[in-house]
Image 1 (cartoon, rainbow, N blue to C red):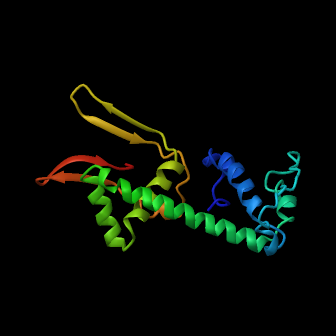
Image 2 (image 1 turned 60 degrees about the vertical axis):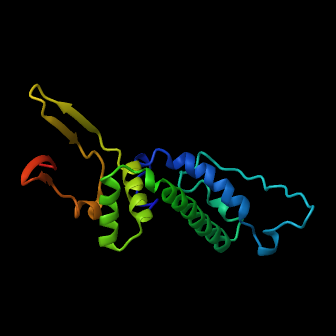
Image 3 (image 1 turned 180 degrees about the horizontal axis):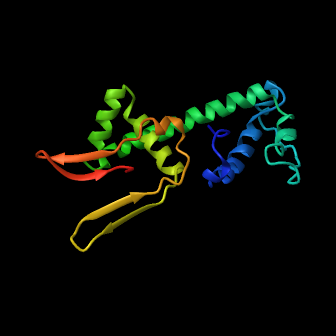
Length: 181
């Protein structure tokens, strides 16, 4: 996911990575026995140099070579699982605060797809935090409300294949429309 998305599309990616990578590097070690220091023994972190003259995708490679990549990969995987568990608990706690009928709409979609409510909410959060399309809402002199999005992002084939124009009806009458046309 990270390599497939341009850096410009994730403005928080660099700061997040900079915060996350040292944490991971401090957990990864050259040997499993060095992963846990002996009780009462101070651990002095290795000093490393990151050459900003190198291409961004190359800068951290010399640092990574100091560590066992399998251990580091496992640490990353474990961290992602831990974050998912924390977020899952937060979403479960917040579920009752979501406005209706939206919570039940999301719940219905999740049930139809046989995915958890948490995964449905997480997908929405990822979508909302990564696409950054420009939106506008306006009302004309007759009271008609207009909402527009310019889709100034690259939605990719997955989202493009599931994009639809929607007519919302009540009592057989179109109340409003949301679409690309």
